[in-house]
Image (cartoon, rainbow, N blue to C red; front, side, top):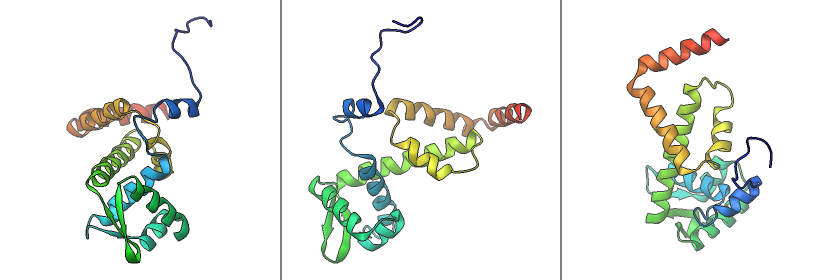
Length: 161
């Protein structure tokens, strides 16, 4: 055993994903689709396959396959003419995924990220535990409620630059 190492079991990135598969059966791609369908259907209660494929920058055939997969797992209903409606389960998860995205985006802005915020958010959001996300939400909430501390943090960062 290495000096200072505890008896915790380490795994590869894929190993952790496999361990957590029961807790979250959705792949990152499935989450991206549900989040975007939730966004697109917010106004009218439905999304269209073409607008989904455009929004995610994927081929319509790829979007069709994923939508069918999500429908098979009862996250949504795929109707004729490319109409997509979220099930209650899909809406609940979509709302959570959008909130997670927004919190992480705000967190990255708070810590001073200015470039690639969307890309970094997309990369991070699929790889956080709910506990870590809750901690980030609490920190973001703390800075919202205490702007003087956020300003003190920003001043600290300016001094380091």
